[in-house]
Amino acid sequence: VVPGETALAFYKAKNPTDKPVIGISTYNVVPFEAGQYFNKIQCFCFEEQRLNPQEEVDMPVFFYIDPEFAEDPKMAKVDLITLSYTFFEAKEGQKLPLPGYQ
Image (cartoon, rainbow, N blue to C red; front, side, top):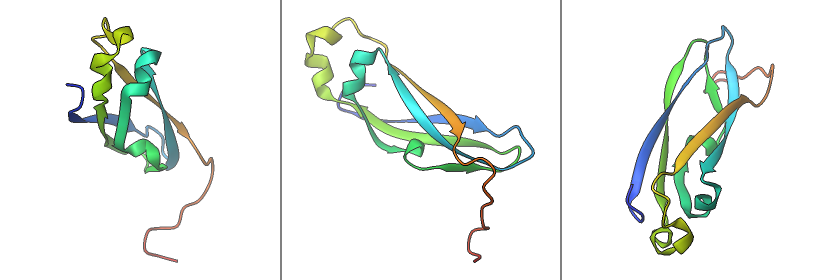
């Protein structure tokens, strides 16, 4: 990814259980110092996600690295930034209504 240019990445998530799961994601940027330059424009992590039993989905992240990254002397030796997510159950046992039905 070139600093200043937008990029799109996908993360795969699968619910291996026989019950629906509502989850939320937190993210981590390594190296830590590069995190201030990582900007998410659109991300699955902004909202809770519902995964049905055995469902597997690709979840998009639209982002860019701030162009100031290239000007920061502390980032001169950084040539790899890793973005990782932890997906965890947000509302254990909550029953969700079917979409469109009251």
